[in-house]
Image (cartoon, rainbow, N blue to C red; front, side, top):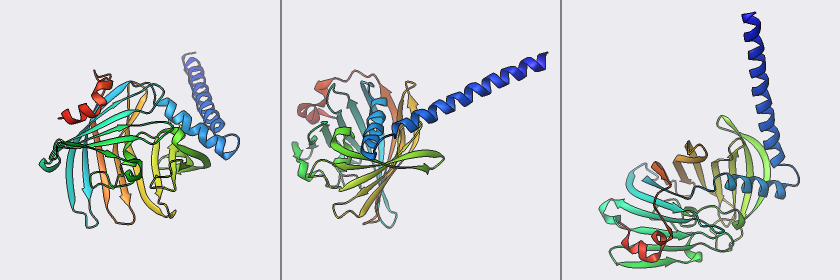
Length: 273
């Protein structure tokens, strides 16, 4: 009787697990129903919505700049992010080390339907410099990330198209093509791999204005916070034209801090330490 009871329990659990997998597969497949543009927009929107509602967070970063020969420079910086209802996030980066960049701060007011506003504070000049939309394709602090790359990815800033399903690492991914709507973008298009289960960005190919594969970004070591929000602890971007790469190591994520809107102004940028 005991063995029969255990067997029934195993069968029930197995059925429950299989039903769960079946539901997940149906849920994922339903995202890519319809024409390619509708499916791409649906996946991109769902991916963004799953990560909304965090309020604010802070983190620390180590940036490693690596040249073609493999020589490295290291920088340490801090990040603050706050959500803005009905618009894009506000983000501030503050550099702590080495001495030549200490106190440099970068502020982004992301927007859904217009170019981001960006400002850079240079402590040696005691001056806040605006980064115009036409200049945001330039290198961010000598890295392989552009200023454009540092803002939040807002769904409305791109057209989206679902291309295919494809294995990525040990996962199955949706592959989307997104095309920037901003004419000043440094990219003609991007290919994005998102895992089908959590819709986390796993990899991005960036194509320049001549439609050549310029850069690849690989996103790794995801951790979940507050039982909902996925954050990567390592992002690597490689420039195929120059052979250079930049690695961002993320740590010390803190959610629900005492940040508010006044911490993300040009005045706050000058006070950043």
